[in-house]
Amino acid sequence: MMANVLTVARRELRDDFRNHWALAITGVFATLALAIAYFGAVTVGRVGFTSFDATIASLVTLAAFVIPLIALLVAYDAIVGERDRGTLPLLLSYPLSRLELVAGKFLGHGALLAFATLLGFGFALGVIGAAAPEIRTLAALRDIATFMISAALLGASFVALACLISVAAREKAQAAGLALLVWLTLVILFDLVLLAALVLSGGNATEQALYPWLLLLNPIDVFRLINLTGLGDHGGNDFFMAMAGAHVYSPAVLYGTLLAWTLLPLAAAAALFTKTEI
Amino acid sequence: MPNAVELAGVTKRYGRSVVLDRISASMPQGEIIGLLGHNGAGKTSLIKLALGLITASEGDVRVLGSAPLGAGARRLRARIGYLPENVAFYGNFTGGEVIGYFARLKHAPEREAMALLDRAGLIAAAARPVRTYSKGMRQRLGLAQALLGEPELLFLDEPTTGLDPLATQQFFDLVTELRTQGRTVVISSHLLAELEPYLDRALIMRQGRLVGQGAVADMHAAAGLPDTILARFSDDGAEILNASWLAGLKRHPQCGTNGVLEIEVPAARKMEVMRRLMEIGSLRDITIREPTLARLYATLGGGAKEATA
Image (cartoon, chains in turn orange, green):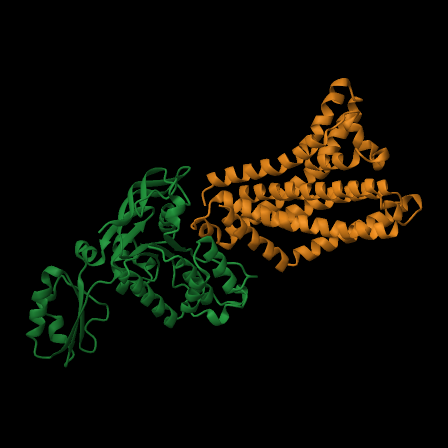
């Protein structure tokens, strides 16, 4: 079974490299990270690398927008693309299960995104570290590692969501539309709705107890929580952190939730694909 | 001979639409079987059922003695080759990479993949991206992948599409060779004249129903289609055109011009007509043509105009 998964994953990864996806995504991550870190404080009349906490907070905000978008863009046609090409019935006529095909697609695209995340953001953080010596501390390195690992997990969860979309859609255009809808909902609408409800209600006791858990329903918020809770002053994200209130999240719960956000969509994709007629 | 594929009362529905209607058919091992029918007749659905890509709403499907879905499906698929219609493959990959990918999925050795690529006449283009291949080259690549793992049973959907005459002949030579090796080849095609000399058996479908099946010769006999007799005379043949025994025989529209007589003769009257023709002194030549597969298809499948012979 694993041999088939790896065969499919290798082909996807090779295709992504050949399409220059790897280079483009790495470049986008590195460039945007450097630009955000350098010009992040321009609104208060400053340029250059400011405090470490502010830099990480800026990168978290950037990653929360860009990583889901790119993950969806890379993998939305994983299955529906094979259908369009006419290769889906051919592949499934081979001794290859549908679970293996979905897992191989996920692994290939997930590896690409992990590679680009680690290299792109890693390069940017290396440059920032060279320009700002105060970053070279053990605590800062721990925060950087947390950011990189959680960013890779965030990418994996959106690749898994993209696989689910790709299985559910009958055409590539439909999959693209669904991917955009998921991105808009999770990146923008989800927090907006929660914040609006919080502001309008004034935040009663029930809501204060409920909201910290509601945030776990969005992998992007889980990613933010992993990275922002440890920062002094929450890296200037008070508005978002207000929803978490005084709740103390265990790292195991947050990482476990992000992992569940990867495994559950993948399991749903495999289950749906098994029932789909080709 | 055991059957490679057996269908017993198979029905496939999508909602209220019935795409396969109570199909019962057998495809014996070691034969070349033609799956014939108009677009939408249900040929591809039948192939998909046999491959386990869709499930039957009713009835039973057995392929090489096993159910196409379930515990033994993986082992079964290793014994089957398939060429879908209009497959595009991966444009960024070379022909060598594509066949290598499918060989790994079928656990076939790399050297077998390269040998098949060579046999398909693509070894010189093995390092070229598939997007630069012509339609015929992509079709040959598809045929090569279908043969990976030396399958016992092949399903080929419109296999000669895009092939030039030489490649088409090579394809049929290959199919004939596969039959001599005892393998079963199921071909879905519209090119009946091209297919006819190689078929052992045909399944004719119409609107999801099987309207005819069996050995091609037996189907001709059962359908009672007339032979065509073409006689040439040294004179203008006017005398014969008025013969009373010609009454009731269907004449070709061009019949009677330039001393040529072309008539359709039912089997029961063939010898009598031959004898009468031989008695005519001006008879120069005589040719008997058996009914074509296209004619049989048009008769059973419905409508001569769809039968693209």
